[in-house]
Length: 161
Image (tube, rainbow, N blue to C red; front, side, top):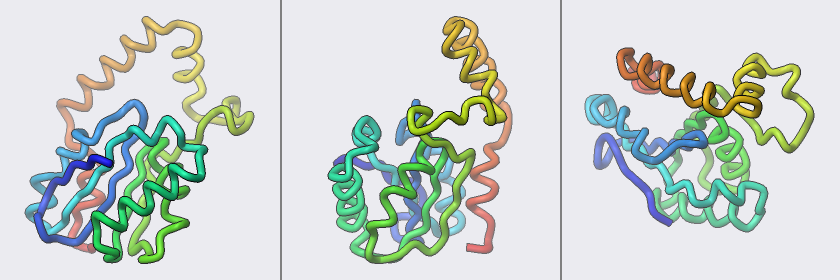
């Protein structure tokens, strides 16, 4: 399984599970702060996201993280659906998790009927009913994000690690 590495080459290990859609390269935002604060960020290739309900793929992911981290204790960040995948994966880890940060945690909508209770239900409904408007909204959010500092980077890279 492929992975991307950012930050310090020998710092404290942080495994980042991105959202979907998403990509390991989004973890690049942590690179400068990781180097400054002695944190090594690892982000796995998202190919296993397609089979998130597969017990075998979760075990494979856990085994791959153990191989990459040499069974050292790791800290975990799960963003959006990555939070769900992080929880599914790390329950099988033998080395333990130092800290677990779930940011905008989400679960697959197919697993229950929670859309009506969700704060973001309008966005999900927009995506389902008017894809072009959803794409426009996503583009606008991307522009806003490009001009602001990432909240995740601020939270993760504080000296309290």
